[in-house]
Amino acid sequence: MKFLKYLIIGTIFGITLAKAEIISWFRIYEMFRFQSFHMYGVIGSAIILGVLFIQVIKRTNMKSIDGEPIVINPKQMSISRYLYGGIIFGLGWALTGACPGPMFILLGNGVGVVIVVILSALLGTYVYGLLRNKLPH
Amino acid sequence: MQNIIEFIKQPWPWYVAGPIISLIMFSLLLMGNSFGISANLRTMCSIIGAGKNCEFFDFNWRSQMWNLVFAGGLVIGGVIAHLYLSPGAEVALSEETIKELQAYGIEKPGASLVPTELFSWESLFTLKGFVILVLGGFLIGFGTRYAGGCTSGHAISGLSDLQLPSLIAVIGFFIGGLFVTYLVLPYLLTL
Image (cartoon, rainbow over all chains, first blue to last red; front, top):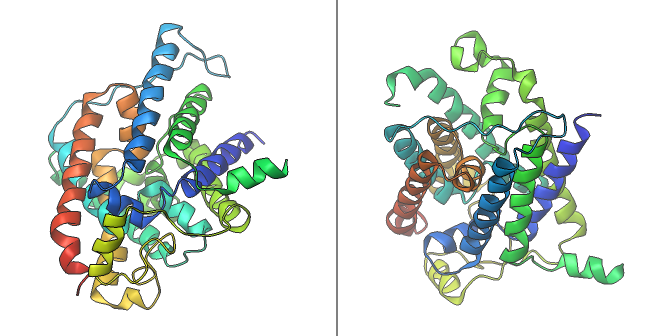
């Protein structure tokens, strides 16, 4: 039962990304061609409100529902890791028109072949795991 | 009630979707977790047994169970949107986008969520379908783990926390995305 809330939140997230067409390959193409404000509006408004939420959490030392302090771990500083990793993900994002969330939502939308994208992403993750020690981080 | 459902069935504008996304991030933080979807790919590798020959996947994946359930919710959300909330699957693209994609041989840009020319089992056995679905998926998996996050973990969670590493990652997302969109897709789509 303790997982039910995550299922509900995930479902709301899935409906939102589907209804706002964020899972559409076309919308991602349009975004990278700067031909519509839609995606920038979605991501931009999410970040602006997100900054506000996190400031409130930090300034009020807000506790989680379990009564634990909410800790947001700072990511370890590096340039190569985020830049190279980011570029590689960006290539895949523009090709498939999907980031990891939309892959799962598209599957629910009945785009069956997206399972191939998911399996390939699992393989990509696995190969990263194998090569991790040889890559600049 | 009927009116509300009719309203929900319309495509949602950005100023509805964006705030809901930050509320989702906020509720996951309140539950003592964090918002990031690509981590599930690592967890799934671990469940399949990748931890046996690679220490990166040798961790207690049960601690990530909540996130897998969240990803399960994504699939359910997709099903609900598809079956009950989408009278039509058209995407209201800009005129420019439609014309451009037609020139690249996409017959009806925006008539469905994804171009049927690319997202079909038949397409998988063509060069462009293979590059888009298989290579594209591979790069998503490799890149998100290398960068330590995707759009949710870096662009939304990281930037909301004003973290420089996330800004670098998002700049990377755009370098990669712009490269493919401007220099690869025009050739790939007309293959």
